[in-house]
Image (cartoon, rainbow, N blue to C red; front, side):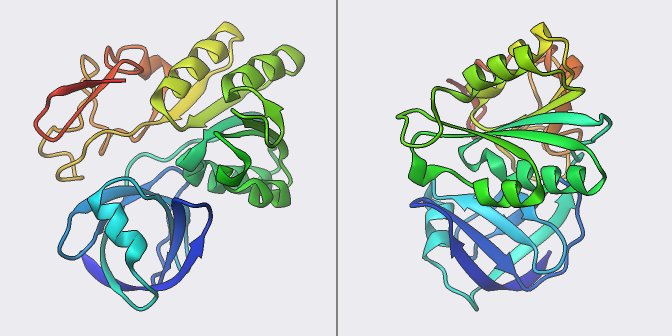
Length: 258
């Protein structure tokens, strides 16, 4: 683990902030770091800005991330990584679905894809307009952007999955990528499968070690560790996971149903 200072904090939404660290950390889209908040805990977090002044975009959710949101530029954090299997681009025309803070790994993926000449569409979803994340960023990269909000305050008044269904009826895509609430991703995989579009999903599970030793993040029946073989899995792998879209596990291993 290396200790690093927070260089800049950007308030993205009411409960989401991006922390730019004084650290050059080359990484691929979809990889993560284990971030230690002194006096609290260590958490796995997707890298939203790889490279110089690496960036982590973080939702305030529990005690550790709440403490992180209270910190200021100059404060010190601990970092391990990058870890995990990255999202892999192989098609020439892709579509990505990001819900809420799930846009954190999607944004760098889209930037990389477009830089390689890949045509990209992004469906960005949130409950309301003020919670939308990285819309300007992916538009600036050159992506076609479809916005959905549950309350209709911006873009289409619908779920991301409804927009995906309509887009896949209208256009042909080589690949689909998704990150966000697991129930959303479960539906995305079903819709993409119906339209014969291979999909990769970025998963979240409770981590303890982050290096594949403890087994806390193993997907049920698939035998794959989210920290090591993941966090990004292909649809053919996810189909073997009996917990996907149904339940997760807490620190004790108890099932928590969605």
